[in-house]
Length: 369
Image (cartoon, rainbow, N blue to C red):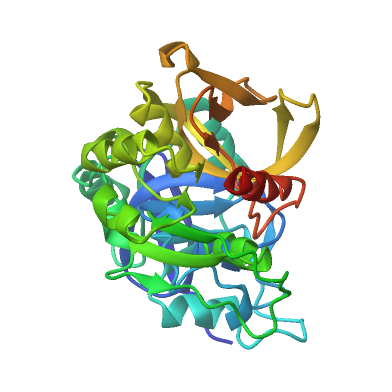
């Protein structure tokens, strides 16, 4: 039996974890975050919002149902590294086409297993998300720590330009997709790190979707004659995207209906005069309780964000529509006079509950008014 190659995980405060390598060998750096989902590791790895981050899964056994090409959420994995308690070498699922081990190796994602992920998560919850590294090359914690301290911090880091598409394209849903008869609505979707399932949700509702790069101007978007504008999820600090925020201001002034999620939500908050702040360790997982203040209903939702809108910074013409019941952070906004609303979480799920599907329907209603 082949002996597992050793791997080392070091956090920027000096905490070190020794384990075994899985996936690709090498050295990788990123902000250490954790996700509480029990399943959906492939969707998590391919979510562009994880660019610049190393992800630790809190569920102890990961990889048991393998990987397939149907469940990817973008053109490639974006997580900088992957941390699990135990990586299954057996892929038992009729849809599986390869193991997680081979998938990570093929995509050059460095992973570490056989560490105490509970201790790691508790440390992050106490100390906050921080820079980190996984290495199968460097075995000296002090030497690896020096490299970690030289790596970039997430605050003030702009990453949407690194994950966005290079040119505009029309989204064509899979032949197997369930489709509602064409609604004739045309949506322009900004790709700040868009997940494919957001585009699927619009296509299922009969919408024609044009996806544009993150640096597309308001004038270029309006020239496409959209019925509505979608601002996608994505990685990095929204405060570092001043040029994009200026374009969103112009789009809002055009009174075109606008819907934002995650990073898109934070950018809307900034465009209307609010500010955002970096959370201690963020929300990442498929079990976050959100209250819709407009209906009083509570939904269980999928999250992946490390920044939030400061409610005290919002002007009088913007109201909070949703809150996170775990910490009362802002989870949704609506402009009182303009057709603009947003949520901090992921109504497209993938992975996660489907409690929030209604938000796509709410946007379609807004387009028809």
